[in-house]
Length: 229
Image (cartoon, rainbow, N blue to C red; front, side):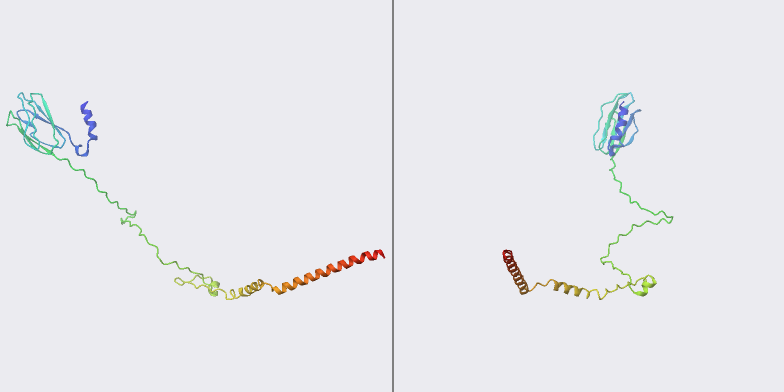
């Protein structure tokens, strides 16, 4: 069950500890086997005694001191190396039993540099396709070309030669003078009337009304006299 849990936990380890594993060293024949071992940081080394005599593990050199308890036949002891460096160790009961372990530092995580993608054309020549250059619009205003009004070109219907801009025909000269009489007529029509003429007309109208009133009264007075006679 523990082995299954260990296998399931391996993908969850960080990148620097993904390569960490367990290693075994056997104490047999009054020797450590293997006598030389190289492991990455975070690895666990387990020593197992298979001799009838007791053995232990004690470092003689290295960045971290290690000293295991005395192991009888069939017993094991494990240690996890978290500091990189070279470790030399012996059995204190049998000084001729020597061995060494090299603990490698974790490789720094490197980020892959983005690769530049090159776009190629589908032709067999294999030339690199260049991006179209962006052109800035010119500050000069576009020139307007008017169709030629010459009788010869209009009659023939032939297009103008390339590179020659046709000249625009001038407006007819009679268009502007034709508007002057109309302007003068309008000005004369809006001229105000003479006040003296208006007063004379009013007086004449009043005189006509008075004459009509006098005549109507005279005819009305004469009518009863004729009836009495």
